[in-house]
Length: 51
Image (tube, rainbow, N blue to C red; front, side, top):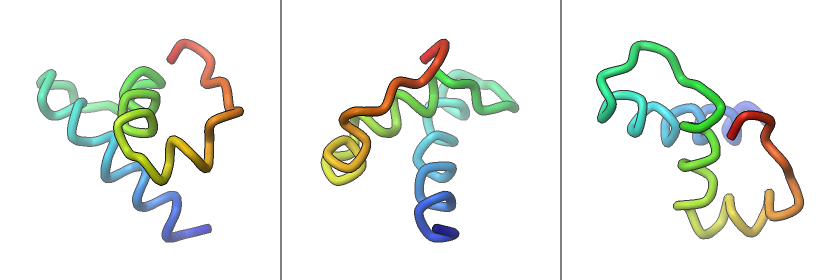
């Protein structure tokens, strides 16, 4: 679980940094998950509010 959380946060940090934001918002999480083949498959049935 810790590895999964770290992976998602690392991937979500990239779009946040690209948009010059200091906080990760739900949209960044959504983008990170959908752009990663393995995470997209794992979380295909998950809805992220405000994502």
